[in-house]
Length: 302
Image 1 (spheres, one colour):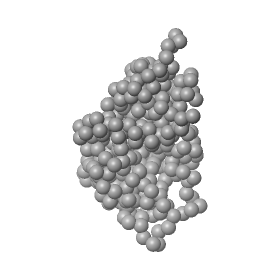
Image 2: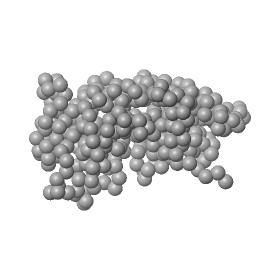
Image 3: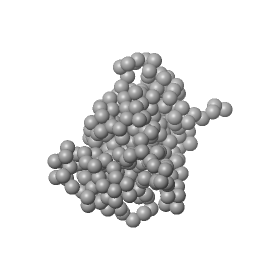
Image 4: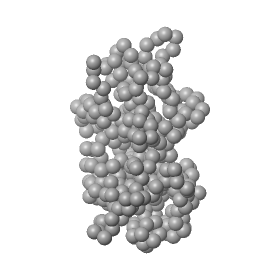
């Protein structure tokens, strides 16, 4: 019996193939063609035969078996999605389902916006696995680290350059950077003056710097935050030092982007290095990182 590969292993194997095939000119990943070509080569009796857009009311994407007794699978993404970054991630997500889950779900899989947001394996394992595969395939950590080192404090422009490189959204790129950075930083996505969701880097989380949003009452963004003061943000080019007691008990540097087209605001909070006197509040730590939302990524620029 063939051993099942993990999402990370599948992504790594494909990354090695892409590195060898395309050398330096391999980004962004042409995920549609990759899904078609690789599945035909690896599973010629059960390949992906179509990747196309379609009307999927209530769903972001789907993996469907071929109809009329034919062999193979089709990937469909919602034709209401306009951003290339979101389309790329949706296709990669469904490609992950094909590699990881098609044998267990012969009737196919349909993915809602909420499914595309899941990153906590305890919440929904198959969606978490598909998202992990997609992130590792589109934004390999070894390459990302070359663009922004783990000790670098990036601004949104620097991360935006990575978004262009990988043809992913700014939010997805920030999340990928948070995965490996050695800095204490937090991403906060808000709408209508309330936090939608947030994600802390490992070092920030370990020192108690996080916002728990899952299964909790809505958290209002602070009045003195840059996200709540658009005119101040515009005057300061979207970057400002924020006093202690505003976002957190300690001061931070806030970088903000107002994504009007998608009706949400991105705040990237950079904190100083942890001090021995600032310890994690174990009683308030969530069991796992809050769900992150690739669905709210907007275009490849946000």
